[in-house]
Image (tube, rainbow, N blue to C red; front, side, top):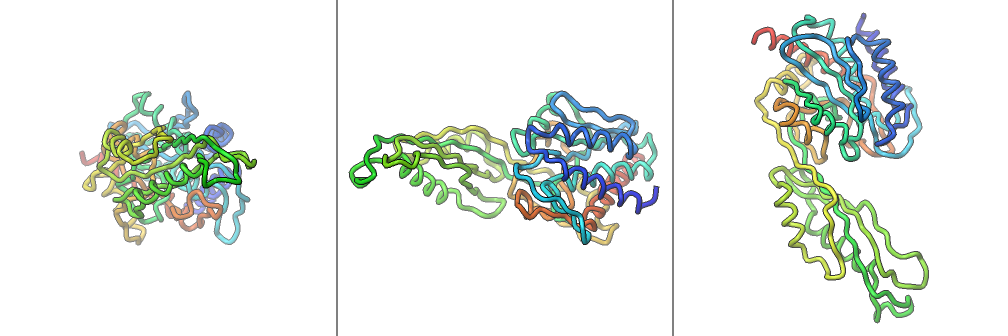
Length: 363
């Protein structure tokens, strides 16, 4: 098949995926469309959907294996889909259906570049990455392992990512006696308490780099709008945790915050940060694949969190993240990816597999 045919395939697949709304826990239709596309138009030996909805496609039979792992779910919010002027727009075009489409088509292209017994190749679409990552955790629980993993997340097309911050979700609850709105100076409001807690959290966790904490207020609810000062309220906060701080240390840090006596903090979830080694075969393969296309790769650390946080050390110790698309557009209403970047990502994934295949033959 010609390279232009593969270009048409990756554009067709991405368009199909972004046209199918698939927020976390609602991925089934998109997974089914990806399954049919993969079976009908791409070169894989086996395509299966596991018990939680992950799609796992594979070919080859080598002693070593590589997995391109992306996710098919998106954050909520439909966007108008369009593909004109060399640009594809829609929810998930960047995060992360663009990288996912590039990976599935790129791995299929790689089959023409390597021997069938050189390397076992997997392309995996996980569910739930934007939620509890139940897709990644199911992959771990199933005992899946591989020599190399490329996490297919947007990295600006040239960045090779080796570090992601961790993520903690906290719920704060406050109570008060309430009172009449005509005399707030003489009464108490749960809303005021929540706001004061948020101001403290924002001050304590105010970083803006990958080596610092940052905090985001994602929910604030108190009162019903009537002439009564609210007696209770709830706030949810997401804190991003830099590399090096584990669950116990973070829990201790939260317990030492000066939270008012009428409020409590509940740590709902915690995902450990991750830092993968630099001097690994998968990082070198990504670098070579990018250099061969005339690009200048860079190592990067990301502010966010990905399924790399879960898969590193459990599925493989050779892990790095790479993907086409501008990560600054993730989760926004302006998501788009250029066809040029999409194709560049597809070729990069194909060449990463080729590089690892050659390494396997030499081993």
